Length: 236
Image (cartoon, rainbow, N blue to C red; front, top):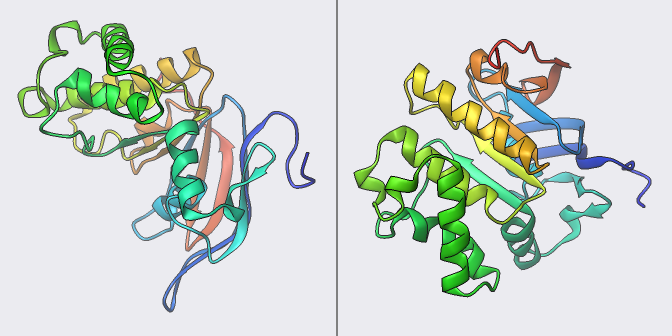
């Protein structure tokens, strides 16, 4: 195992620097995320919190520093290898869901499964199972434009978890929802992530969202400003 990581670590960043031209978005971040932990990343606008998520997930390459998934240095992978790793090992939930509007709910959930080699029939069966688990039995054949914002995020959560990823990344997953619906979405997201033993990394500006997680990291000016156990107010 690499000297930079320890047993039980799902994800780690070491001396992460990310520059966009003359702007330094990440200024040497070190972070270790244990397997199964739900981590909230907070910070003001332009603090670097979304950049950190994008670097940890391999969406963005770092300027310098290394990201590890377990003992694997994903910063050393090619673009194609990182894309494959994201498909197989990571799940994503974004603010607007990013569902494919031309596909039904079940087809949206089935897409990553088919990209991993599952037959269409098997992938749709898995999708139906996940949508049922998340209370969406009546929406399996509906299209994204025919469901509510909360239902769309549940579909996105089903899609993220259907491949049994090691890590789920959620970037402002409740940002487009009202407070009550956001509460429901976070309950579903954290419960299902724990049920599948997935590590969860959530970027949010909402302290109530952060309270659903085990740990809170605050980012300011591209550096970790605070790192503490999250108050469990949201899960009460």
